[in-house]
Length: 319
Image 1 (cartoon, rainbow, N blue to C red):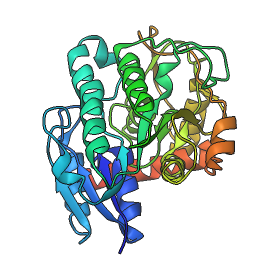
Image 2 (cartoon, one colour):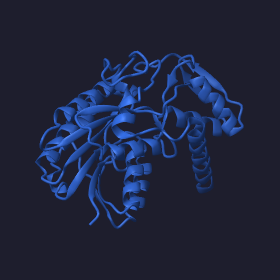
Image 3 (cartoon, one colour):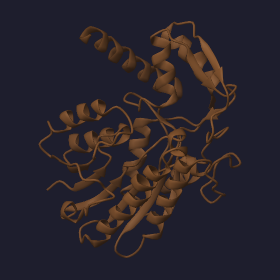
């Protein structure tokens, strides 16, 4: 009999990719996603329609922070807790939503996982936002100093997970570094840049463009997440990054080449809560997970741009 996994945030960018891969390999998957207002719900509903075509997929729309999950955990062996409210800027005006969706929800998931006799491991999706402007490269045993309510909520939830590691449940937290690729959330910079370029609209650039990010392709993230379910490591945080830093100016140069468009760039001030640079130390990922990113940024962003071009073309035909 195939093992059963529970994926929270199963209709999200990363969660749907993970869920689909598990299903395609014969796993039974229980997906939990209440389709919040974080971004356009139509994208999530489209993913739900696709997932429901798999006979081994079961869906629940419970609010993770409000309802017990005990009835879903009966046969589950691994919980992939990817659900959460993402986005730095909105968190300054909606801090309570972030506490509810990230911290309260995580506490409830952990409580049900600990009570279940079948759950052996929980993998938590944390974020590089926990580091703030720490010294590069960001190391898991180094200081954490979030710059936003979002980053703080992810750190608090991560701590809950790691403190729950024990005889009843093994836990591990993965600090994802700026995930991108086909299906990326519509509020994320790489998608916003590409859509503007393809539609020949001005690109709003916050900051001077010298900011750099350690971008990580979604399939690499999914691979690391699955490795975290089988590793012997537990009770620790592990960075998952692409392995190289790229400035926003370099992103825009590549985007111009990928689209064949001359970009119009509008400069804006630095956005509150955004780190100047991110870069992952990957020693733990290599030694504990056996993980190394496989997709370089040019290849991955090329795939994302092609996906967006096709999506925009489909939308134009539909209208």
